[in-house]
Image (cartoon, rainbow, N blue to C red; front, side):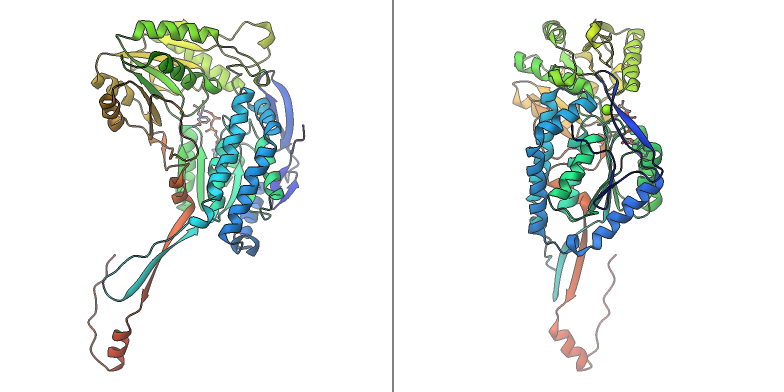
Length: 501
Ligand code: NAI
Ligand code: MG
């Protein structure tokens, strides 16, 4: 494998200033996969300075929107050209099944493709005013944007923020998660090959508490895009408050799949399973609560159990249904929640263990797990587990389904399974979630706005909505009143107008 392992700053590769490194493992066998440079505060400072200098570098600031779009489109092309290699690296570094990793790279390319088309369409407006004025808006880049990303979709989530930031003419400093730094570095390499000027994209590999914290509190950073835990999101927001810097926060969830009694059974079953077991449940928008009509409960759960037991577990490159979890920490955390679920009195239907297959012993695997008889206040029904664990709850009427679905502190997405369009839209209108899927889960790609209600965060990524975060509006007001000039010249008295603030 052709890996990059140094920091990518100002268009060149360099070790960290202290010479420190850290390792990233393959969670399928816990073996070291690669050693990469460990950025500390001073390396972040150098990266931010490079990004700041690139903002006013004419090679970027004067490039012109069409050419900026072309560069982004070339990045998309190169990501596709190197799809297989990138997918393998992603699969090894974070454990996900190869086909899911291939999709990640395709989506990453799509982000660049989608936003490449936007670069020359960032139109302002003209605003009609009373009197003789020309009033218009300009959409300007916001400046240096910081991107702090998690380990569950390393390249996808990076590109989700970086592509729109670049399309709008900003510059970027990206700190990927310490568990999965490899594809971010290759994006650096690709960006250079695509003709992105030096310093426009910088990648610093390192940990959260020093490199990450420095990046979020740096006075020359103008916007922060963060995806990760609520706890860290809170720290990011506090750091941003010091510098009065806007943030986009995407902080996970506890998303429900509501299955009504008239649902189309096989597709609901497939949807519910994919929603919780894709990427071994390590998805911010995973459907980790099944809220099912009590009339359907027995049959549905029986089939779901059969299905969960048939899922194949293995190393990502073997393309199983479930790969390993990302880290020792997550492995422990998920097992801890399984213990909690049992203690709370939920009924463990299947899974709940580390698989005993000796072939998997070295890896961080977990069986797909179903908990039945879960009640809304249990911790396993409230807290984000981030593993292949489904909490099953039942309801008797729509009001109750809605109350359960909304009765958590998160609100990222929600699924509804029914053939009844009135009930579907009744629920969609009342669900506290940034995205609602009807007879579907995870659909919609780079084009659809995505983000949270409540503690799932705020701001919208993806789609055209994301551009709001990466542009700032300048309003220009021009007095074009020739008549007034004439009257002033003639000494006619002028009335003072009031001030509108
Ligand atoms: P985390 O939120 O601590 O890590 C995410 C990113 O933030 C990483 O790049 C990390 O280096 C960085 N970071 C950590 N501390 C920081 C700080 N003080 N300042 C700036 N950046 C910092 O998440 P972690 O520890 O990997 O996972 C813990 C839990 O978070 C998971 O079990 C899951 O519940 C949730 N999570 C949610 C994700 C989502 O997609 N919304 C993704 C990853 C984790
Ligand atoms: Mg790794």
